[in-house]
Length: 128
Image 1: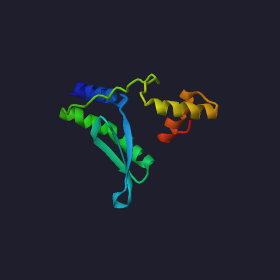
Image 2 (image 1 turned 30 degrees about the vertical axis):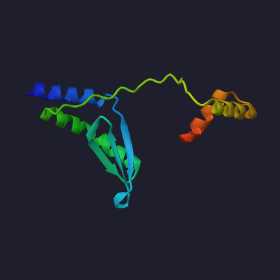
Image 3 (image 1 turned 180 degrees about the vertical axis):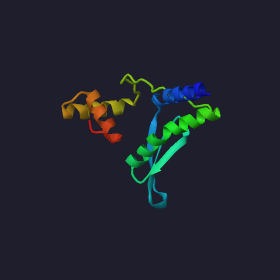
Image 4 (image 1 turned 45 degrees about the horizontal axis):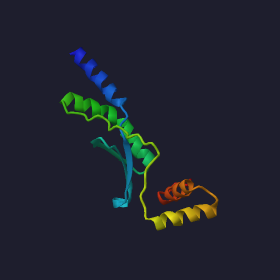
């Protein structure tokens, strides 16, 4: 019986050290609150009045959650592999757009690539 407890604890630590993908979402209903969870573990979520509180609750509960799943024989999904991005894409566009972008980049004194990267960064809310 002692061996089984040690084995569960080892397995729990194994899962605790895996790189699960954490998310925090704001829920406006009921006065607003935050939900923290893991993409791969939809049954493990915690809430809080602030994002930090929701994350703190999630981190404090996950050990017991993994342990309980292991004791009950519930299959625990592994983390999703994060895709690797090269930073290069090929974009097809109408020649007229290509010309307009090249002319605007030239007016700004930057390369077409830099002009487009800056525009894309702004479009997604990043300052480049």
